[in-house]
Length: 105
Image (tube, rainbow, N blue to C red; front, side, top):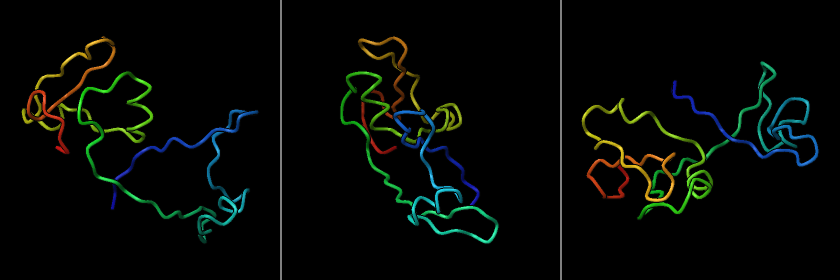
């Protein structure tokens, strides 16, 4: 399909470069399959589940749990409640389909 999402790869602790499969590293030491066009094809697992059952503690908790991201809530129209500011971090806005309910939607 034509869905695209960015992945956050681990970083080399010394150089800071992202460590992802490339032709130069044999497609991640053969964890992925080299393609005819000099790219690597990797198997992935998609998990569709609720990330939180209550307000997350802080931004670090959010970023370590929700590693891929999401579409802007406005793209879903009026189905999503207006964002609520996190109780202790005003830089975080939480959106619910039903106000206060943490659900897969």
